[in-house]
Length: 197
Image (cartoon, rainbow, N blue to C red; front, side, top):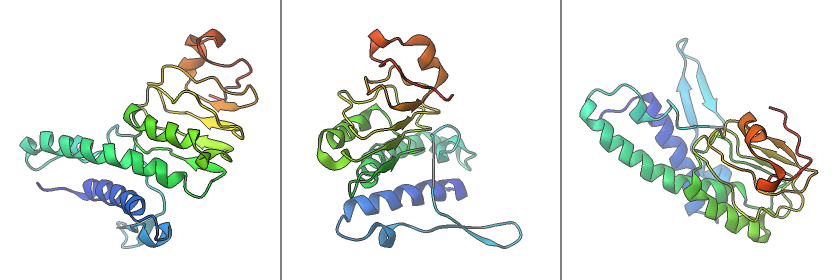
């Protein structure tokens, strides 16, 4: 299989997140893979954050030298994304954070039991902001969704999401517009939500 820069970017960023997950006793900063690129003018640029949404930014979605490799690449991507999502959630919730950013982590419903486990434990008790933006394959969120300190839940770009969990009415929810049109309080969306989309 011949892969280009996009595939290297994908593999390096997922590997970085997984290295942190499988080496919990070492500092995350030490384990994170530095992703660098050389621009057309020869300048070196480091990417501090890497986000994917799985729509046009995966190696199998690009041009390939050998078209017959595409199914194998898709299968490999699926396996990597499956492991990556769980690791990304665990890594983001280390150290009882006030803010958890899971934006562009290609999260899917298969990853929600991990998020639920951390919500039900004390790991997320202090979280004031939860960012799940740009995870377009996500169709559901864990229930119960008990985050007592939560003030902002960001769901922009989560266009497959079918419903919101019941939350405290003081929570600001940045959500896809289709949710405000199709879901009422009786379907699990608490009254008092404010949408900024």
